[in-house]
Image 1: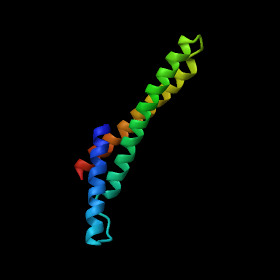
Image 2: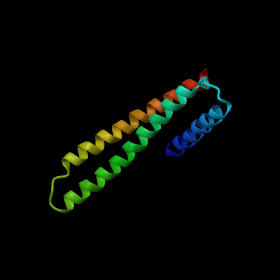
Image 3: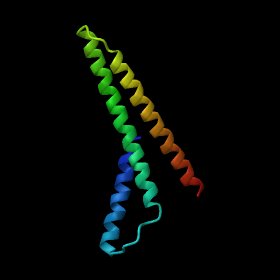
Image 4: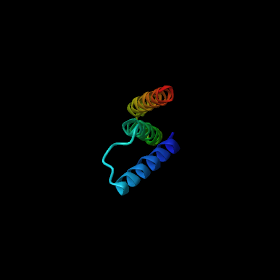
Length: 99
C-alpha cells in the first residue's frame, strides 16, 4: 500500500509539473480521485506505523511492570483505522475501474 501511495504521488506531481509547463489551468481528469486515494493510502500508512509504535510502547511498559492495556486499546483502534482506510481505498480503486 505504501508503494502504491508513493507511485500515486509521482503520477500526481508529474502531471502537475507538465500542466504548469503548458500553462493549462484545467484540472486533469481523475485528479481529485487520485488525490483522495493518495490521502487514504497515507492514512493507512500512518495507522500501520502508529500501531507498531504503540505495540512497542506496550511491550516496554509491560517489561517495566506497567499496564499495557491502554496501549492495546490504542493499537486496536489504529488497526481498525488502517483497515477502514484500506477498504475505502480498495473500494475507490474498484469504482475507478468500472467508470
